Image 1 (cartoon, rainbow, N blue to C red):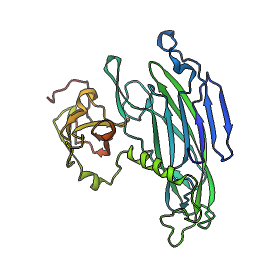
Image 2: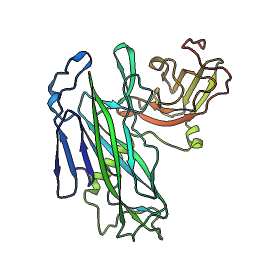
Image 3: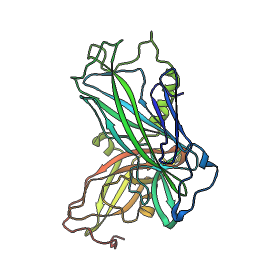
Image 4: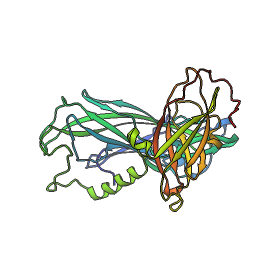
Length: 341
């Protein structure tokens, strides 16, 4: 059971939505989508055509736990996608647009960069590579609260409403666009002794706290490690080689016991907006904690190289969100020819 927040369902231009209000304040939405038109004018068949393809929920990561004015908290956008369908991670995808979030914030609140869970490589017809998200997953977003924001005492936080408009694609053989306009409230308390790390009072436990604690643990386990550059560099090292418009980036992960727990495989998922990988389908994978990939680097190339290094497969994956500065170069990046073998 999700804690109080707002849950929106897949909103389609071709669908009707039914909203049910619950006594605990949770708003649930559901849709019965019409079959989407696939390329070539064909309509996708199958039993999914009359089922809900996706739901989206928005709430504080820890409902009932306030944020101290001048500090930081977290909100979470949770997705549940019908088996066999997927949506897109914000990477260098060949075909699909990633999830988009537009925020509605009161004065004094701002959000940081969303932290997405580890993606899965999806190779479609024609060896087109996308990075996708499937099943139930959560995107965690930091919320910074300015010290000037109104707050209350520890037992009586002041509530502030924040909203987010979410747009996304749900795809199988064809894609269906979805959108949801969601809102939730976060509590803010004034700074005070012992409130640097505010916890719920044992005398007033948060309803469903044990179940939510388990959900939070599952959410964090699916996210990459976002560490300081110094801490990250102790685990993930890199070096550049080659010259000209194509450079080779070699990545190595120092991870003890990798072979014993199934983490001897390695892959790199690049975020969108950085240098283009010459052949992500084959280059961005390796074994024994090492991989080597070619990138088109030239004068004016936007950097740095950002992405997630993923170790292992299946349920034994662990990821590190990384950022590598570009090498010095004076040659413009031109065509796809590679002289770096």
